[in-house]
View 1 (cartoon, rainbow, N blue to C red):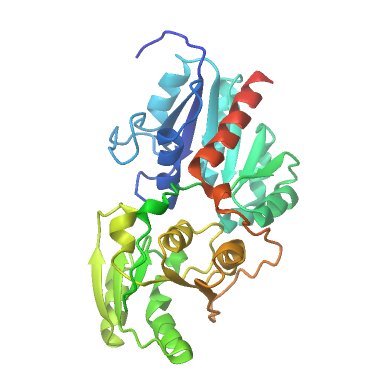
View 2 (view 1 turned 120 degrees about the horizontal axis):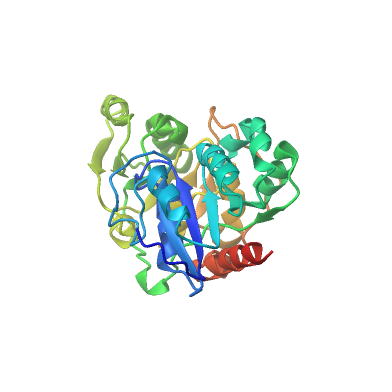
Length: 330
């Protein structure tokens, strides 16, 4: 391990498993589109030992917390940016050992608001970043933490890549896990067909997860044609495959698949009121909210995105990197 000290700010993004979900995708964009030559981004799993290096996430991927600790002994100007509750706890204890580390916390989901006890660890943190205005407000209240800001997720916006194909096929993009409410997909398809006269009975599913078999049984039972595709991460290839995205999630704070689909010219039926409120100002004719029995998140305090450029990854990473540089100087 190189022990040479340098003047760069090293930001260690402490995340969960190295699966290609929305969080990992977002963090990899921070590294790929960094605008500051004073910052190096590293991606670290909260697992103690993992296989080092995944081509999905870029050059600076560490092999877990043990390797992170080794790095911390060889670099100056370090920030541990925690993206999960487990990461907050690990960051806290590393800070006890090496006190000159800057700690920041990125709130991506509403589930985190169920863990008010995190404030016992957050008193050592300098900043909380939330992906929407409602999450910022809730973070201040739940964690008794004043230094909170709102910075949305960022994405690559290239109008040349818009795929404005109209196909009578539904699509789903995301993990097949309980928190994504994927077992509601057949019911939502039936509801949309009845309410809007769409009459579509085919869906392409981009994703893997523990509910794949259960979802397959439900799709067969409801006589819905389906196709599962895994390992495809190019948005252009994904969104040219169908005409309408289904978002069955009960709780989303900033749905990347929703905004990606809208940017690529797709229609979206979403079960998530927050994403609907966030994006309806720009894409009112393309996005529709479908209320289901399972909906739990009806926040009315969302500040909508008014300009698409607010979500441009270059704009987002500039705000984040300016913040990290400022925190390391203070």
